[in-house]
Length: 185
Image (cartoon, rainbow, N blue to C red; front, side):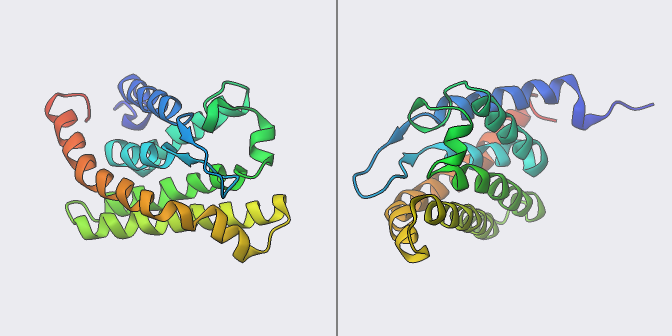
């Protein structure tokens, strides 16, 4: 019987390291006066994780991060934690990041070596996260969808374009180097 490559000790360890990286980058945030949503590096960490691990393992790593934050470890933006964070203005983005990981990672795996498809996948994944986040922000804050969009998405677009560019340039190189070093299968 062959070993299940998806659940090997080696793969679980790598997923743990990626989860730890998300836990380190997730709390680092910059509050902006025009929005209850801070600038966060969580999405960049997710972009890189799906390049390194693929969509399944990258998504699982993010889900573990989400669980760690939900049980009270301060890994969410601004070193916050708990279910109240999920119920707050940014909870929809935290949930939307699950779908961002799936969509972005699927494109990266499906269209290996095609940078323009990586960009499309990351953009579509980000749109999905923004959709969840905007709907939730509007509901929690009592905003209209357009007001939530103006405060919860528009100020973040320039930074997200940069994060996508960084991920598209760094992700494949990082994956290649980790494979050459024997860290990845």
